Each structure stands twice: as C-alpha cells, then as structure tokens.
Length: 246
Image (cartoon, rainbow, N blue to C red; front, side, top):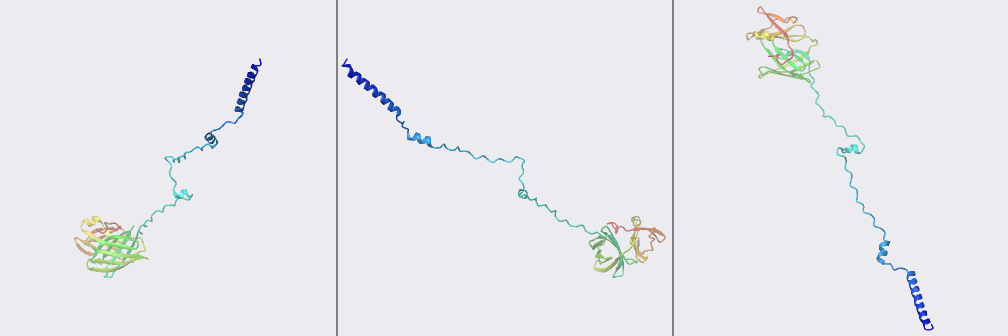
C-alpha cells in the first residue's frame, strides 16, 4: 500500500496537468490569418451599373422646327409679287392727221380698230391693242399706227411705207358708234366702205366698188344703209375685233 501511494500521486498530478492544459488552450484567443481579416474588413465593391441606352423616338414622331423648339411661331411664307393686269381701254376717238385725212379709233376691252380716210379715195383699216395709255395697230399692207392716250385725247403717228403722218384725236363724249363699215355680206358682193361719224353730226368715208374708191354717200345710222348707184349698201357699227379691219 505504501508502494502504490507515490504512483497514485503521480497519476493524479498528471491528470490534473492535462486538465489544466486543456482549459488553458480553450481560454487562449484564436490566431486569425491576416489575409482573411483584411478581406473581411474591406468594404464590398460597388455594383457596376451600365448606363441606360437613350430611348428612341416613336417611328411617326416628327422633330419640331427650330422656331417651335424655341417656343416661337414659324415665319410665314410670303407669296411672290404678281404682275398687275394691263389697264385695258374702252373708248372712241376722232381726229385728223397733219396731211388732212380724218381718223377714227374705237377700242373695246383693249382691242382697237382704226380707220383713216380722206373722203375721196384714200382709206386704211388697222387693228391692234390699246392698254396702259399706249396703242399700236397695223394694217394689211404693213401700215403701222402707234400712239398714246389719256385725259380725253390721243396722239401719235401713222407710217405707210416711207411716209409718216402725225395725228391728234379727241375722246367722244357720247357712247354712240363713231365708225361704220359695210357688212361682210356686202363686201363679198364686191362693195366695201367705211364711215366716220364726227361729233358735229357730219360724216366722212370712202366706198370701194369693184376696186374703184369713191366718196361715200351719207349713211343713215338708224338703219345702217345708204344708196350707191341705185343700189342699197348696208353697213354696221365696227366692233373692236381682229376681223373688223379685214
């Protein structure tokens, strides 16, 4: 019994040492890997967000005009200026050429007819236009009459070949016709003629029968007739149309 006492004491001491070692190991702080601690302490990386693509306009959207984008009305488009229509004349004139012949001009809606005669054998018919204070007429044989009109008067020049005559005429105050001519039916029968009705009530004209011109007998304007060599000749007021001077 005395021999076993030291052995038990040794075993008891060894057991107590083992218990104390185990308790000491549990109480000591754990060793942490520095890299693991650094990773744990670092803040989490921010999530990378891709920028959103710009929204496309709808297919039928129309971009606003610059003026509309600024909140101002679009400038109005001005129509190009137009040329004003010509001022067409509508009147009658009677007068004389400086060579002694008589002239009558009648204008309707800008179309003009003139008749020049000396009451014996000279006569000329001319057609043309009269507008904006100017007139120009031509005859079948190249005669040319040009002039101007305004303030109740007309003046100008008639050219026949190499000869020139000045003319002056006054506007008639009455709407009555100032110019008569044998009708187209009468002309087809071989008789042509023209009459100028003057403001004082007189008249002058030339009648051509079978190519021979003679002084025109007086015409009755109320009936448009006259007698030539026992035959009735019919005439009518001249309308300003392209065929009046044919």
